[in-house]
Length: 205
Ligand code: GLN
Image 1 (cartoon, helix red, strand yellow):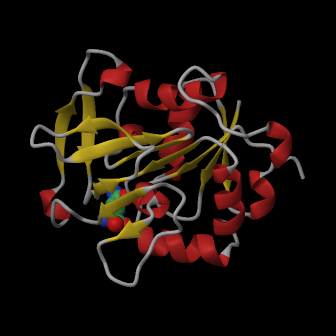
Image 2: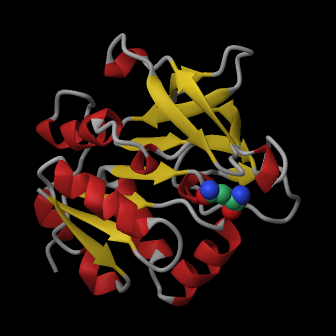
């Protein structure tokens, strides 16, 4: 299974390592030509403004949006989730709109307020998942087709899925727990989602 990881900024190396440990063939992606023929794409954490500017300059946003809207599985973590969002709290900074969610950036405060917390994620089984939150966003609102995968005890939404699109506020790639990435990879087996109209051939150049 060929998975691309956007490798312009942020924690792409950790995702590549995690996906490789799950048995996937994971590659860094920097150019539009490198997203052809993929079975999935990851937008890592980092700094979402920098990531947005770089992805725009490298011409990745529009082809990615088309592929994702066509059903290509995507995982966005932290800043990657911000990139997938429809709209942000910051006025005038609307996201590329690849997922029907609204997020608040840096919702827990500054870097020093970063934290770890055991998470209940029923889709991954009963065992708690180690949540690593680094200047994390939260999901403020979701559209009709979006499913909540994880909430903090107070109800704050920190992981969501919309068919082929998976997003979380935390960093599964900074843990030793492969379950979140395996869940993402299961999208290709078709048992986790309705894959919409995606066909692998749509990606072939
Ligand atoms: N606070 C960052 C942003 O909004 C995201 C942090 C992260 O990806 N760890 O861009």
